[in-house]
Length: 250
Image 1 (cartoon, rainbow, N blue to C red):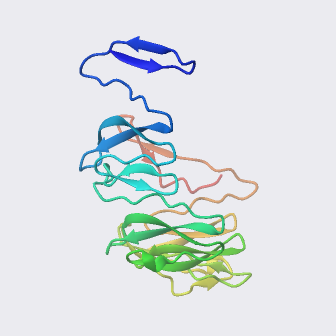
Image 2: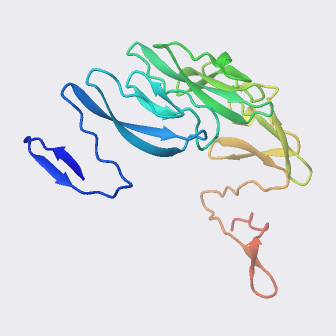
């Protein structure tokens, strides 16, 4: 049998299964804390209610940690990754949040840690494993991004120039072999940038890019022409893919 006092001071009694516990009733000057307990892998296993002084924070349960400034409790281990986890970062009004990545030797992202820096300051990428700072430009503004040591950091070019993209090298049959930094970092236009091994440049609508030599560039028709798409079919009538003969513009 359990009893509880409502907001009007009236006592209400009711019955629950013996396997369950009655709600905790705290005395004056106390409050109820709902405390969660976790196992060593970070999964919740049970919760309980405890009374604490009204001006004191709630305690944390098994295998959990308390995080300021809100005094929330989180498991010490992330149940999805199986790795230790830190408390969330809360930056002040005079600070900015920074997300600093860590990379493996092959350049794969391993983790992301949040830190605080003075407002307007750049993130310290050296705090991440195999991470370096890269100055990038977009829309006339320059910013710093943390990238892997193995990634290409494009050069910030002067006004009136564009940044040439990373080169992609292909095999003779069109398989991607890898990528590398271009020898010419800046150019007047994309059509002046180079392509990688076994690659060729396509231009359409004033924009140029590189594709494997085994592929065809899109067809650009004149103002008095229209584009036709020609499809090949097998002898049994099944569609066999787009024909390579669809470059002709009647």
